[in-house]
Image (cartoon, rainbow, N blue to C red; front, side, top):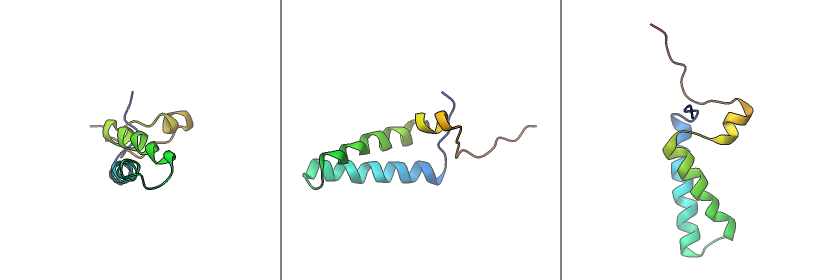
Length: 65
C-alpha cells in the first residue's frame, strides 16, 4: 500500500472521523455516523482504497535527487 492521503486531507479525515464516532457513541444522529471509523482509519494509515481505485493522491510529490 503506497500512501495516498497526506497533509490537510489526513487532518480532516481524522477530525471528521472522531466527530462522527463521538456522535455515534452519544446516540446523536443516525447509525451511519459509524462511518467515522473508516475516515479515522484511512487518516491514520495514510491510505484510502477509493483514492487508489481512481488514481488520486493528496500526498506531495517526492523530489528526486
